[in-house]
Length: 145
Ligand SMILES: Nc1ncnc2c1ncn2[C@@H]1O[C@H](COP(=O)(O)OP(=O)(O)O)[C@@H](O)[C@H]1O
Ligand SMILES: [Mg+2]
Image 1 (tube, rainbow, N blue to C red):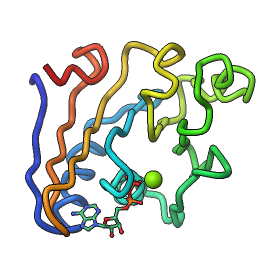
Image 2 (image 1 turned 180 degrees about the vertical axis):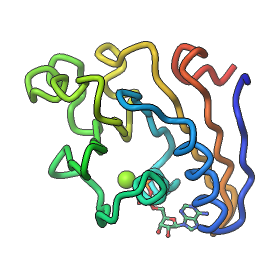
Image 3 (image 1 turned 135 degrees about the vertical axis):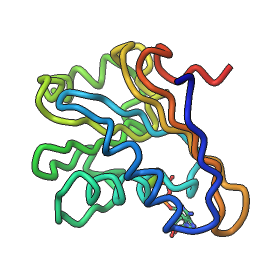
């Protein structure tokens, strides 16, 4: 599998894409969520956390940097800026091989990101439609080309 692409026209479609990924994630996996503001990174995370079996209610970690939903860690790297700050925040400790880690704005900490990670890229194509591309880890993280 090079990547999987979902062209969805509703939140329900986004939920289905998240379920597809949830079925494939293993403990310790890291998922980078890329896309502009409003593309649906947090919405996709909410669906993924639910699909992984948690009843936690997901909100954006933009200001808190990190939320822990019963073994699923949700982070926003937007304000971290660099891998050094990522280390300083102690967030690297969550890469413990047990938790599933979801990171919005992974490009902000590109220098600290393990090469082996899933990448979800969301593109807004209409008010409720999105192109959602999911690339598996062996692509070296992202691999849009
Ligand atoms: N198919 C869809 N998938 C994801 N979000 C959608 C979809 N249709 C509409 N939306 C809306 O788009 C917005 C996405 O916001 P959010 O998930 O916070 O984006 P991000 O985290 O990328 O900034 C939400 O208001 C959500 O309800
Ligand atoms: Mg967000």
